[in-house]
Length: 255
Image 1 (cartoon, rainbow, N blue to C red):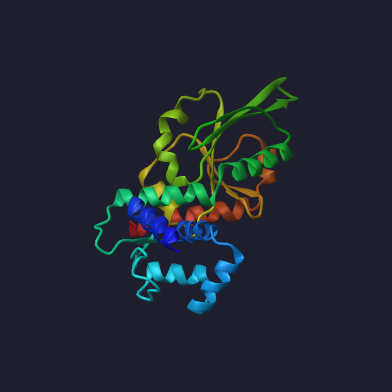
Image 2: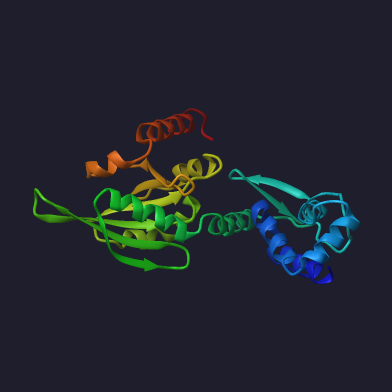
């Protein structure tokens, strides 16, 4: 168990602010170093599920060892739960960093790419070019316009969260002016990250929201030129009504 104590202590002190989901995954990763017999013996001695006991020991006063890090300060930020050291005076930058770190874990770009590619194929597009950065993906989708005898071109940027978009505005704006531009981001637990984005940023591109679990895409901002795309959205009218409601609330209550 000493190695588990040390690994968790180092990880928590390194990041200082950690999302609930990230902490659970880190505990699970550390416990993988135990074999079945060792884990069963510890659970018998401690009287419960080891993963759950360690999580509570780190995030509450129900300590099973003084060697575990103390992260009992709980914060709700952008709809996600985070924990930090009680003696640490956290800053907004650290919460933002922890949110973006968790977004990359929770919504891997590979899963988002699969949903986007399937969606574009249903709309009769071909993916001609893919470019990958560590924080986002780019792809060019082409479709032959039978009436105008030319190709429609859509430049797609895929991000692990809408909170990631502001960091890459320059990259987005460098794409060709004649191309339709689309930013694809995953769903969030609450509308909070989307409301923050609407209040603080204005990007010259459409924004679509991908639900990886349901393998669907819906509009958030903007209307596509191609009717086939509109017809393949899962719930376009409902999604746009939700955005309209958020916009009205922002104007009336300024939150």
